[in-house]
Image 1 (cartoon, rainbow, N blue to C red):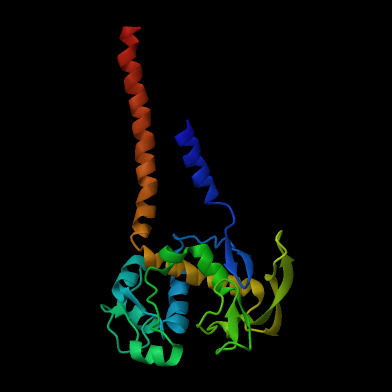
Image 2 (spheres, rainbow, N blue to C red):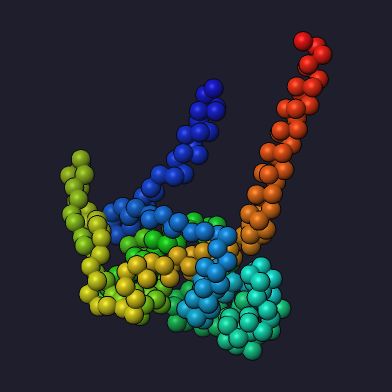
Length: 249
């Protein structure tokens, strides 16, 4: 029973809040609560990704045509809504910026985001995109509570606005004092209110989750039929067992 108990404990721990070190303290990851079978959310997230992320970050493992196929979009819809360059529908989601230009402007080559949701987790991404704050000491004027001293500008600042951190001093048992970010205060309003911005970020994270494992959409659609088949098979199996054992008794 011990291995079974350990497995159950491990599975249960996946639903508990996760703390990550940031800004000298701990930041609790906020559950993203995405619905990967929500194709409309994925569509909205794809548009956000193209408008705000694809200028610097590629998704070189994904073709535009695959998005059209998975989300029920025509090639014309993909061309008009998701392609802002001279790329063709059958091509990968790449960026025009070269690695050399990225290093010169940002200090490093911009990472491809094809599997970022699988590498970081959707809760990390959701919390990260909500945790930028003004920091005049940084080159882009912002920092992030989840990813301290991040080199990325806050590309969604016009939607969210600008916020400053609420910092508290924390002293541990050894007497060491550190600063902990306990929340944020909005000092410059954006185009969206807090709830609207959270919804936008959730859509973007949903698309990033889809990017990391596009075949999961098919598995989710097929899964309910598999469960129905297994339920029916269970009923038939129980009836067959009852028939076999009736004469033995």
